[in-house]
Image (tube, rainbow over all chains, first blue to last red; front, side):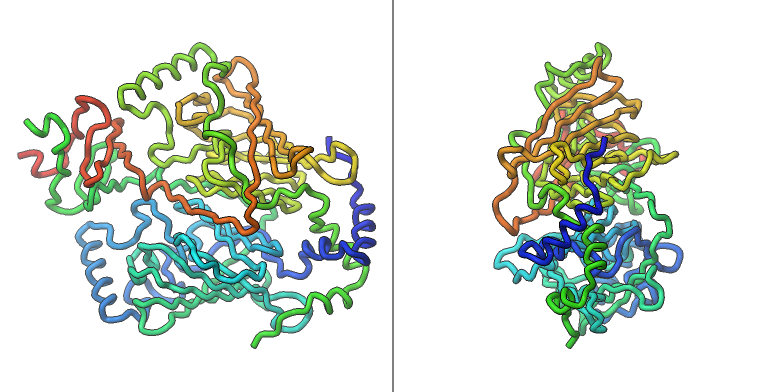
Length: 287
Length: 274
């Protein structure tokens, strides 16, 4: 049985306290101050495998401003993919996409806004949850790099109406390897990427959310700006599916080689004429 | 430069009615303070396996699993291939937990395999046709037990779990029928608000009676705790091919997990056919 908390009584007490010293406690959770990001957000992108920039075709069509060196890296990755390899997309091994490709929202995302932190939950390859700290902290001196990186945000009231409307985020300390999408479009191996975002509701349609993402990366000749859009699921109680990469992954990596698992449970080559794995540690193989 | 809002001027301009309304919507003072980073106390074990009220059938499954582990196998622990532990095992809290309380949902965020949970507290009924998941579908109710006008206990029921699941890495099994029901009472210690308890009752067809244990967690003292990222796929040395489990050696080669284990069948490789 639920307890006897009276909401109206609690509200009156809260209002009374707000005139005194406890005002901060009430304000701390005043969600009217923040844009309504509640619900389930689903990416808006053309059908098929999503690209990092949803407004452009995949691969070279993305027109990512790659340096010559990383154009060559991408070219080699495409050749590997064409030969049956996995290329540079870490998701083949169930490693998380990390920032910024995770914001492609391969699975729906949920945004939980609290005064000190905004959380972004995306249950994709990895059960990823971004923490965007909005408590005014500075960059810590030592941060263990993570695929999601370390994100600090700031709420901005752009139109001066007394309510925040944009969440500005900067993310650093991102771990690799990462690629922008499954074509293997690469980010730099040095993992010095800095990602800046502006996250806001569409002014005309509050069921659309935009994330304007600026990637600053040493594999680029200049910052690359991409805007992603998400549509709010109209269901007030949407389903949250569990996506477990390990459950259905038929890629097996042994050493530096990647193989497939056949439907009947045998190891098989991923590329034409690929040699089998070295079985030196098995007694029978030594004979 | 964008204009930052002034909370002070907003407070002055807001009407009392609006303040009351927003306080009702999101008044954190109604809820216990579960903020911060919670760490388990002790090893990530469910309980002494000998105390588990397993049916004879599942006791036999558990003992066969132990024999397999003694010969180098992995038993029936599904997490060796990075499958999620699922409920109730996630409450072992393999990696530190954050509890994010909002009026409609309490989120439990645990960066392990796929351990995070949503506990819906919006008064919903059990939906029809839920797709089973390892974490299950959780509905919770906040309770003001001592009548002081503040909630102090979150009671949770979880259904619609998917398998295979075990309680911990010993391979102590839950029934494979996926009909487990889990009831929890989550509350702060009355004498020490930096200690959290989760009293967990498992109702499962592999048990002869409901099994209740209590998990204890302590709050990290650091105001801005570190949240370490763990990625199972990154350091996993287990490789399952067909029904056999192998290891990856430090030099990246496939190696047997058990003494005299046969290598994998390489029938699909040209060179193996020669």
